[in-house]
Image 1 (tube, rainbow, N blue to C red):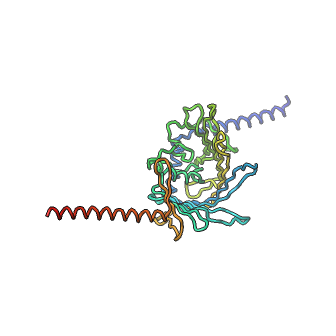
Image 2: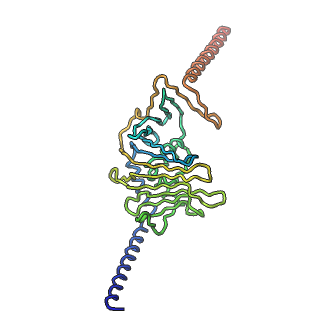
Image 3: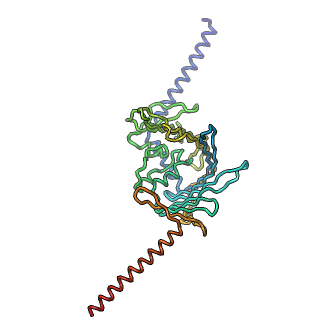
Amino acid sequence: MSEGNHKLFRLKFLRCVVVVCALILACATARAVTLEEVAAVYAKQLDLLQPYRLRYKETITRPQNDGTDKTVTLVVELLVDKLRYRKSVWSETGPEGQLEPVTTESDNGTEWRSISHGGRGIGQIVSPRPASQIHSEMYSSPLALAGLLDNSLFEAQGDRLYSADPTDVRTLALQPEAALLASPEMLDGKQAYVIEYPKSNPHPQFRIWVSADEKLSLLKSEAYLPSRNGDYVLLTRTINRDFTEVCPGLFLPKQSEFQALGFEGQAPPSTQQFELVSIDVAVPVTDQDFLLEFSDGMIVQRIFTWGDKNWSIDNGFYQTLRILVGVCLLIMVGTVGFVVYRSLRKVR
């Protein structure tokens, strides 16, 4: 080997050594994080949120039987104060993105109300609404996809929800069965810590990737279910991109994608794209903000559960029923009063 080739070889060797050392150092630094530190970062961000007003755009794409895809774009505004919320949904139509109201719903902690717009509109009342159903309304939003849904609020109401869930990274990281993999992985050219739950299963039910920096942002999550033959099948995948600091210490993705891959033919695959429009945190709220009024002439259905079925009655029948019950009560009170009066007269 000539002197020139020897120097070139040494230079390349030294460069390789430097790169390997840098990777080893980075991995060693990455392994220094703990699940408790991950939980603490998300707990701090959850504290910064409430109450909040969130506005985002949601584009839903589903395959049709004729081989085409159907796409619907919605604009959603969500006002949340722990379990109280008000949600307004508009449909984006036309080439210029005109907005048409679709639904407005609200839960003030005592009663859930909704309005389906169109014509005179149709209203619904459920009192009280199970916390698990409120959870489903907040489950599909940029905050939930970023791991910032506080599932403890719902479980405090007595509903058994699966709190170890990628939508609540704080709770998932604190589960005894959660595991932080020893080595970070490369994700889109960047290092990411990998958390699996539960660690004792043959295959984790959830796997999440958080950024290997002080933000620990949720970059990606996957959920799995066991199939009929025992293999674990990828059920859903979430990907978050382009994180921005919406207030000091709180980072949210500008773009999110939720993929439902379908499971053994039970449901067709679908994709939801989310675009963060705006968010205001620690906003002042009043009880009036969560009160949804029905307009005169609107058909209003009251929904109640009897046995294992839901039943509904409209406002006309409800008012008639109230009058009949009132009349029956008056007759009963009058009858009892008459009997007591006759008894007292006989005693005298």
